[in-house]
Amino acid sequence: MKIFLRLSIAICFLVTATYSQAQIKFGPKVGLNLSTMTLKYSGYGISPETKVGYNVGIISEITLKGNFVLQPGILFSTKGSKYSVSGYDMSISPSFIEIPVNGLYKIDLGSANFLLFAGPYFAFGIGGDYKTPDESNDIAYGSGEDKDMKSFDCGLNFGVGIEVSNFQISAQYGLGLTNLAPITTNGAEMKVSVIGISMAYLFKGK
Image (cartoon, rainbow, N blue to C red; front, side):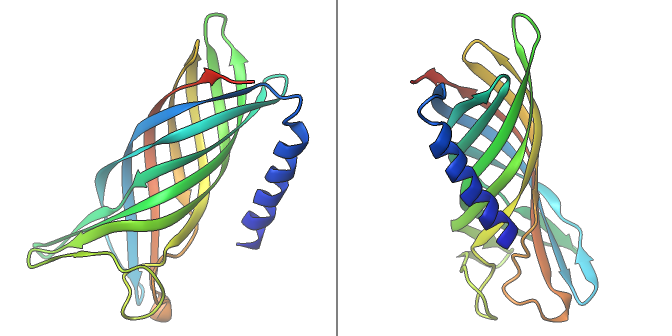
């Protein structure tokens, strides 16, 4: 956790220092999430099934030097998983406000750019629900036996993409590093990972 906080502070200083000279773009981003959330308890795990969600929000792009750019953003993102245990079906569908901070390197292909990117993300649970054959309830965020999952998640994004003019199409893998289980006794663990496919359109700013 301390590493991510220090990294975010360093990024803020970097953005502030380069803002006056940097070329800045911004625009909407929308995409598809294919997520899985692992569940473990007392050494046993429940195999998750992929759940389809989406992400939508705004990203910006700050040119740092040459082909290197910084791409922070703020997104509304839905994730989760489905589970089936001896014919008993369950699902959990948390919603997050997510802040990715990716570093991109652009490779000139002539009429397009090939994109390589990676960086941390920070996510805050704000809604969602869980369902069983008998009931459907809103997710209760927090720590303790009366909660469903912790609200704060952070992880790493890795991806590739193509940029043509102002359009970007990308595919990424988001690896959740935070244990979201509300209690961690008996080895309880809950982590989410996402394969995302997104499209963005960036307007020229400064």
